[in-house]
View 1 (cartoon, rainbow, N blue to C red):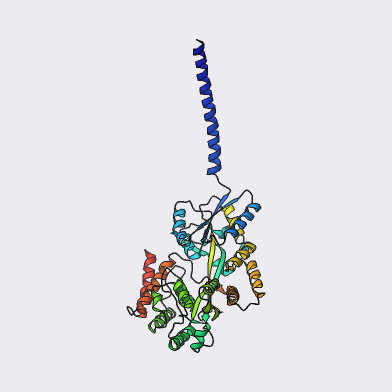
View 2 (view 1 turned 135 degrees about the horizontal axis):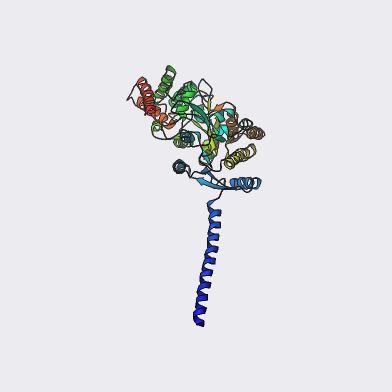
Length: 443
């Protein structure tokens, strides 16, 4: 009987302990789940291929933000350049996008047309907007229209860092060709290209007609006074002015004044040709001068720099990197605070000085140019940075951020190529390009 009573009490005690332990485990699991699944203070930030060169910069930057904005934390993830588009597309579709993303306007505008980004126009006070270059800020806008043709202007990105193209030129090659001054306009370029080819047998310039590469040719339309699209997205380049641009590039190619590889190779090939001494002029960013100095020091010693080649309009292009905030983030307030922190004058200046790029914040630009003016060096790297920075006052995003802009570029490039190869007349090429684009927008 004693054993039976003891066993009964032991069983009761076991049951009690089991429930007690289960309760403790449940409490533990709930607390762990809450801390893991509710990282509400963590801001996820994606950049494009900035590690390891700028790891220490972002560690310091994020630490400063966290100290100033407790209990916020920043989770920084660096994505390879060629993987960003697919990764962000997947993340946006799955509603798992980071809170702040580093993108360029071309690609960001594609998702902006799907209403993927927070409309910053309604989130940022005008006195804050005015701290950024106006033309650069406006380059991050797109009109979203409903089925009832009611349109709303969307600002989808905060400008971060910039680059403007400068012209690097081989003084020896130009001297051999009897050219005393590097070309400043496309009209000058055609004359110089002829002289360089006749006197040296080499090419003056390389501009890619590869749709997935640079926008130089598309930008040349705007620089030569051609409007690409109207406010409804219809082609407006099929004009006498547009025909002249088509004819300009076709003539240069058919007169053998452009390397044949322009049809298949991108801007990297232009750098290779210049470094090999086979090209007289190179349109590139000032940051590439270091690459030339490292890879081809003898060519670097023969080189000098001047401003970006443009058309009669005098317009100069600027390449922009932005920060965008997904519309689906549940931390929009914290994300916006962080994005404005990254792009404020002080932090932009620190980053652009390290990265040899340009700031978009007016305070940072003033400080950047002031620091360059103090440099007395004759090194063309310093001169290139000065020219690049000075161009910011008139530089703008020449290619409008519209839906399927990549398709427009491909259509125009393909048709110019066909005219270059004699498969079409120039008139047929420009007509076909305009019709192909307009038909694509109806589907």
